[in-house]
Length: 403
Picture 1 (cartoon, rainbow, N blue to C red):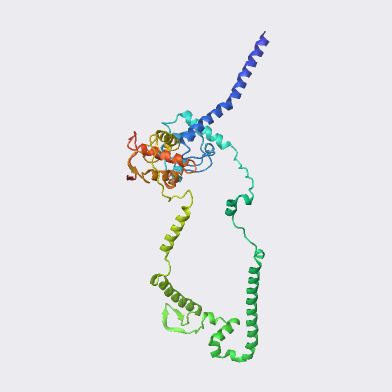
Picture 2: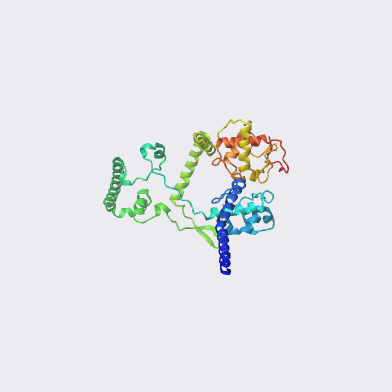
């Protein structure tokens, strides 16, 4: 009897232990699932797992800092910064001193723990390898063919006409050099000792001849080796030698060039100055950019949406992507207050649309053109305008210019 009871009790304990062990992984997975929802609702505007955005990439953050530190930082990052925490101060300085919103009042401890569980799950995932796309025949993909970079062409693969031209030019140069050498060897012996005459050596032909024989007088000028009689500074004397001919030639050429430059650009105005060239290039760039759909300088004429459905969609988009930095009611936290009459980058619906689409990376505002569609950006821009004058509690002080 005792043996049966003992076996029954041991079997029951084993069953309970097995159930607890098998239930452990689903509970942890459930934390990561809940953490994903919290992360997407509050963190994706500023953070990514694998890349720096407004804030740092979060991959393996738990390994670098530890869970306890992450809980404190998510709860109130500025408290850690003000307390002088080395890691918190380093992050604050690295990311342009953009403060992370404090979530201790809006997220529970369980929510924060779930977010950390989600970060751990995503960090442990192996990097995904993108599958190679099947090659498309060139005949059926004209755009891809046009976009393909030009390949380097080997010299011997150039057209025969170019190869013949290069060969002919090389032959002419070599033939010219050969003729000069032959003339030099033919006529120099005929001159005999007359080449050493002072008049001949001082002539240009004589200087060229002796330059070929190793005398550099043509390039450096003749050294007179005459000391200035009245030039004596602390025992230092100087020779009265001419400047090298090459230096004087370059000096005279620079004078002629300067006169021609002045006449060309400033007198006859036949050339364009740097400012004019810059303006021309800017205009050309604007023309080229205007042909693309992502031209940041393109003029738009959107009208603010007023129907309830569009504004409700805009509110959902705002709550999911913008509230982390601007507040749930657009009262302003990290970002500015969007309910007053003051704007940093313009308060017209088209100006707000542009700010949302292209962002202001220097101030921590990320571009949303790759994450939101044109309709979503217009809806959220219209929703922001609908909040004008709502005066939410704890509104941030005005920033920018009054509309």
